[in-house]
Length: 274
Image 1: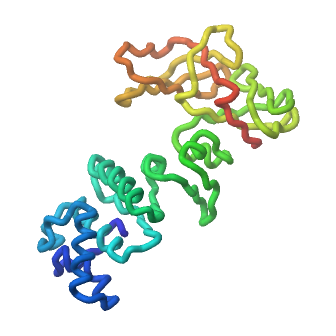
Image 2: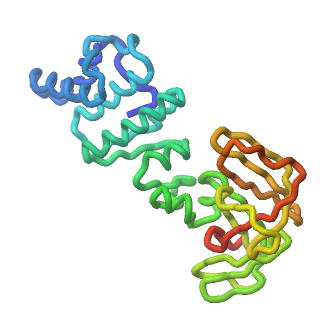
Image 3: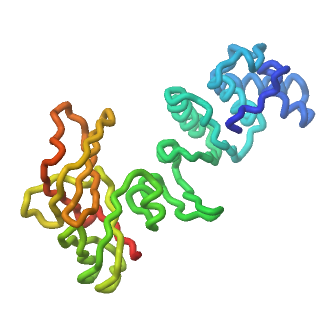
């Protein structure tokens, strides 16, 4: 299934869907029955005689999907099929494709550059770079436990914090960063003196008391309103910028210039040797 639909403009919707069966010399009666069933599956059974030009983009994509499914494949490759649709329709189609995959019980290989789409739709994600798989994992595994600095930086928004290991122990490392010291949970802590990058998701950064452990002070330099959330950007004492994301409750946001102590929990930090 392609982004461009690739429907035959001179054929009806029913004939478009039945075309693969025609090529395979499936008997006409069986061919039409399977084509109508495929159209019903994608909720296009009421338009068998229409031409592609008479349909919306979303409807054309449904027909293209029906044409691929009429062959009863074991694996279906969808190559950025929703890229040409507007945001609202794309989200509706994401939900429908997930439901359809579960009903049919076949494997969907879904290619996309949209990270939110990948996280929303998949059971497993293959993050690729230069033709190689960087990490193959569940959506939550890829987002919460990236295996490399590239994966951490590529998927979603993350804070990148330079630091240096000052102490290493069993399952823990103590890192000097942001003008303070932070304990980090890690299975194989690097040796003391190693240069590292700490990562943490903005939604995991929390305001804490001034004397809290695993925290550092900063000053608010920017506030972005993004609907359901507020994005707060702080400059820390060493000049590093740390982003905090919190739910928009309707309360007035803090003012630019205000100071705050930001907590970075040991289990929320990820450590990568640089």
